[in-house]
Image 1: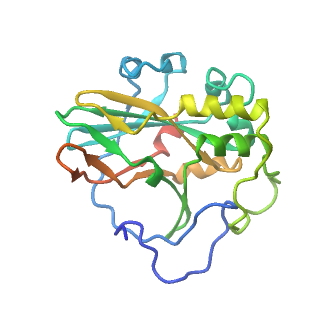
Image 2 (image 1 turned 135 degrees about the vertical axis):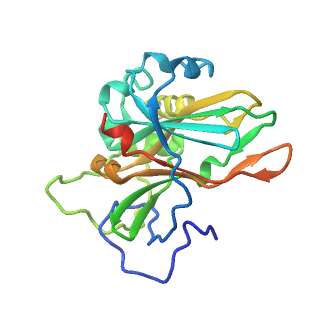
Length: 241
């Protein structure tokens, strides 16, 4: 069990987002190395993805052991138009997080994308862990959104799962758009750069970003079969500018 995210006991669940993994979390901050710098557009162009047309903003950055990870939440509808010209996940309450990995080492570095979590604070000692959506999950949620009453209190998380719809042409187009915009493979080549989007279903509760961190627990040096220290990147900084 990860020391940072190990749940202790069975505490009562606080209000939160429906249908997502949740748990009471206790952890000790081991360092404070997150930086806040302008997004390097030239770096993103090196990936072959056309991120440069996105509005220039600021990204939160953490760097150690030769790997630099920059993170930028997409909090404006205009940021989604190029990648999703027909149907925007943002309109359905899904947050896209642009992630760029720059590997300055002589070895390949792999990030286990399935273990990445978006952590949001629900109380002083309790965080909710939100798993990333697959491309199919993005299409399912975006085409079958769960209605949300903005005046209602946040509901207790329930294991309702992802809504499932028929795989028609609209679904196929949206699934492909999400897949093409995602992070391809999770492996950054030696002295290479990798970039793409991770998607999280916030059900439109984007105010949770004011406490959010992107937690990346599993990073490996492939040639040496060695783990790097986890990354935990503060997203609240990049949502205030």
